[in-house]
Image (cartoon, rainbow, N blue to C red; front, side):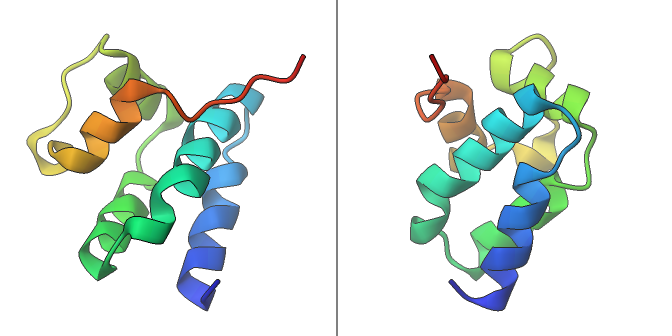
Length: 86
């Protein structure tokens, strides 16, 4: 994993709450291998947003800002990448 991806992975998995870590970190782990430089930049920008907003966009309780609309947000909304511990 290159330096940028390592940094983004760290930021995605260290959000401050277990729920946000699992959602945002799990999303990164599931999808980053397919991302190009534009996608990585978009994800880096997404990480500057509050966890509450990101989670609300993902579950559909708030509209997604235009700057984040697209295939990445659609993949995040599926929430099919989260594995809950037993």
